[in-house]
Amino acid sequence: MKRLLLVLGIVWYLAVPEVQAQNCLGVPVKEGGGFEMVSYDSKGKTTGTLLYKFKNVKTEGGATVIDMEFESFDKKGTSQLKNLYQMRCDGNQLVLDANSLVAMEQQRMFKDMNMKFTSSDIIYPGQLAVGQQLQDASIHGEGASGPLNVTFDMGMNNRKVEAQEKITVPAGTYDAYKVTSDMTVKTKMGMGMTMEAQSVSYRVPGVLWDVKSETYRKGKLLGYTELSKVF
Image (cartoon, rainbow, N blue to C red; front, top):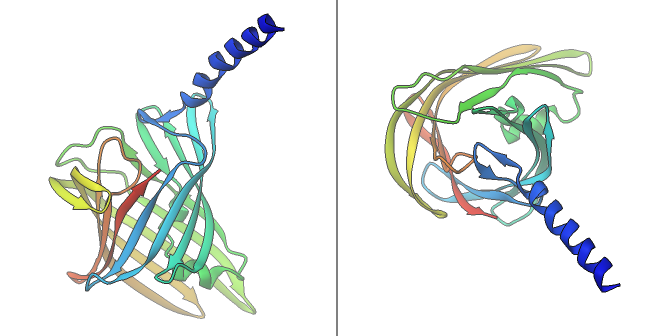
């Protein structure tokens, strides 16, 4: 019996590293892990919390595929929205589901419209460098609200690494790469509406998500998020 338990223990010990060895661009990834972001308005007042949790981590064709559950909470801690995204680490790049570009307000609006989305996903190379131009990303959606057809288009263009800066957020101090992009949102439901904004995100090697992101419109800060916890 002791010998059997010893053999089973060795088998278990050898199997566990294989499960834990899954990583994304050198960052260990395990189910149940994730990170938390705090959102603020333009005046620095807390507006809510964004929670991202790795629900399923698997290997497909040599790539690590991560199903990531997203949940937003208001400033009182009440859950507002849940969604599921996918991240894929393929070779030396991180591919992020472009559905994550859709703002919470838009996701609520589309909830009962049976929207079908196609996208050109967000790609981050494993190695960033100042002056680097990144690939554009976009998402297109079609649905219906009663008799009205609904279309949604969002583009993330002119993505580039502008600088490397030291920034401090609740989770710590980082040497981060500043990535800027132009964002255009077009929604049509009977009448059309277009909004343009600028996005600034700060990315750090060894962290899979932005440690900070800011949204501007015509040079005016609309709001921002900061990394508060990694677990």
